[in-house]
Image (cartoon, rainbow, N blue to C red; front, side, top):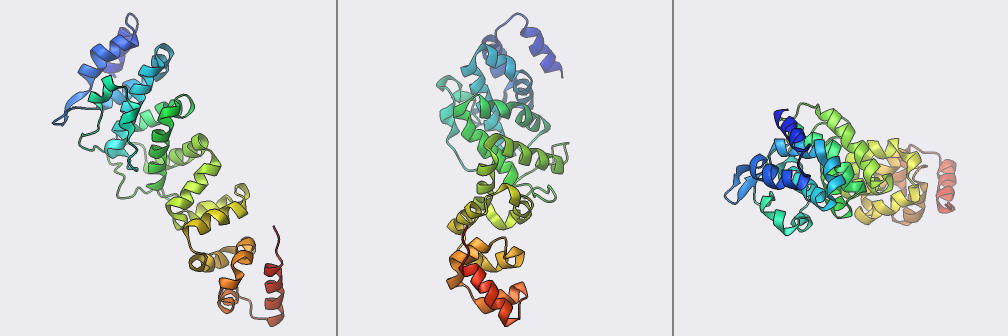
Length: 277
């Protein structure tokens, strides 16, 4: 890309503070995003993705500001997530360049490249940027089907050459790596447990079942979900049935698990009542 070559040439004789203040901010960011001012362009996203390691070596505060501007571009139409008030992450002298009032724009190849190359710094080297980076990643996870990679109506990938399924694989693996598996699965339950049933079944050996049930009942009344757990695998969820046995329709429970023999029913009932984890 011509602009990256130009930046590389400038970096031989100028500081990154000079390059950013005198060229990138006034020349690379495009006017027209709103009546207020600038729109963060794909060229800007590519420059930051390519050079963030060098910017950080010279000036960490400057690097954090550029990372935040790039993430604001992502949050302005590329990936939907709850509002976080991320303007607070920008030093006052850079707020003019924020996407705060810009028109939303969908994900682009340059945006996805930045996510892959820039977000690790936000997680591992910039504590104040971590919350914004985490929100972006979960915004991707929640809007890409775990089985197919199919994007939801809230995620427009029509301008991205990378297949949606590959983006999904990256988003799911990166999020688990960056936030930790324990935080990750709890967030999935908070979003919509039903949506991720396949994930939870596939990852049983990684999740403490008692913790799983605790998270589940915080968001879903036991009376609403016990039938699904019985159909899935009542023995795996025996701790749940022990805790809420008195609330259940036991006749229906035995119908669901396919037990008709009275002796067998009594044996299972005793096993559930006497269960101790």
